[in-house]
Length: 282
Image 1 (cartoon, rainbow, N blue to C red):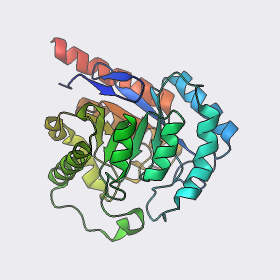
Image 2 (image 1 turned 60 degrees about the vertical axis):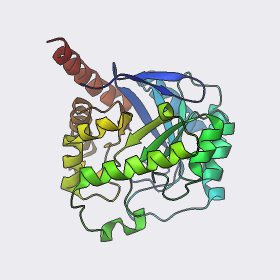
Image 3 (image 1 turned 135 degrees about the horizontal axis):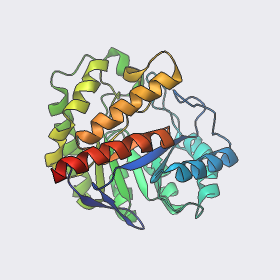
C-alpha cells in the first residue's frame, strides 16, 4: 500500500497518500513540446492557473525553460524574464501552492521571494547543486527528479542496463546532498524522471516497478503527461494513454501526478484512489 505522509512546504503541509495530489503543468515557454507559447502572456497564464485550480489541481507547477528532447539551455535572466511577470500576477491569488520548475539557484531564490512554495528541479541537483541550499534557507518544498545527461544529449544516450536500480541510487544520492545542506527530509519529494534520458520501453518498466522507490521513505511524484513514449495519433488518444500511465503509477505508489489535463487526470486519479482504498479494506 501507498504510505501516508505530510509533505512540508514553505507555508503549509500537504497530506499525501490518502488521496493523490494533482500537480497542474503551466508552461510559460515559447518552445515546450506540447503547449509552447500558449501561456507566455501573464494574463493568459493567470487565467489558466485559476482554471486548473477550479478543475481540481492541488498544486500549480510553472516552467519557463523547456526540457523537451534536444532543447538548448537558456540564461537565468531569460528564464526570469518569462517567469517573473507570471509569478507577480499570481501572487496571493490562488488558494493552492505554486511550484516552479527550475534548476537554477538564482531563479529559485527570486521565485521563493514571490511566494512560491516548491522548487521542482528536473536535474536532481546535478546542474546547480547550490539550489538545495536556497531551498533550505527558505524552508521550501523540493522535488528532486532523475535526469540522465541533458536534453540536448538524450538522443545519443544508450539504454540504462538496470533503470530502476540506477534511478533509485541516483535519487538517494541527490537526497543525501540536499539533506547535507539542511533540507528537511519531510520537505523532499522524488520523481523518477520519465522520459528524461530514458528510452521508451524503459519508461513503462519504471512505472511498473515504481514501488521499488518506496523504501526511500519519501513522497513519489510522476510526470507521464504527454511524454513521447505515450504518444498516439491524436491528442485525445494521447490523453487516454496518459490516463492509463497515471493510473498505473498511482497503483504502484505515486503520491503526486504532474499533468497537463487536470480535469481528466483528476478523474483517473480518483478511480485509482478508490481501487487502492478498496484493496486496503478487503
